[in-house]
Amino acid sequence: MKTVSLKIDDSVFGETEKILSRIKMPRNRYINDAIENYNRIQKRLILEKRLKSESDLVREDSLNILQDFERIDYVD
Image 1 (spheres, helix red, strand yellow):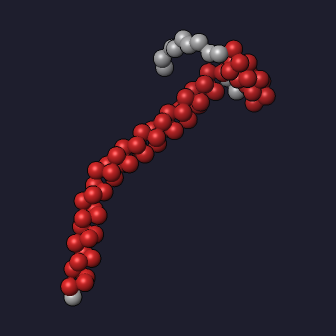
Image 2 (cartoon, one colour):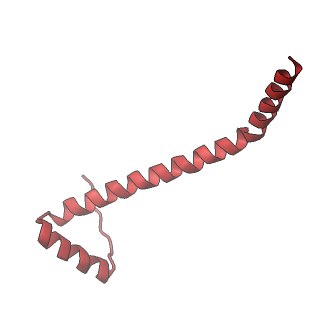
Image 3 (cartoon, one colour):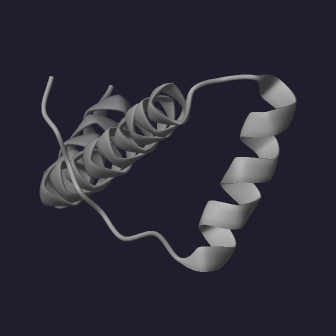
């Protein structure tokens, strides 16, 4: 495990402390879970951007191929 020192806004800290007192979870575990969930969201966003970018790259070629297939269908 790594030790990290961080500054948290007073309002975020206060809200977190209220939640922790109700759910009876150690602050460290809560923060680890929060970061893990945020990392999961960020990975999805990164993948979404990458897939969109790659999709845009092949879009024009896909449309050209589709037009070629349509021409073939009309010839028969």
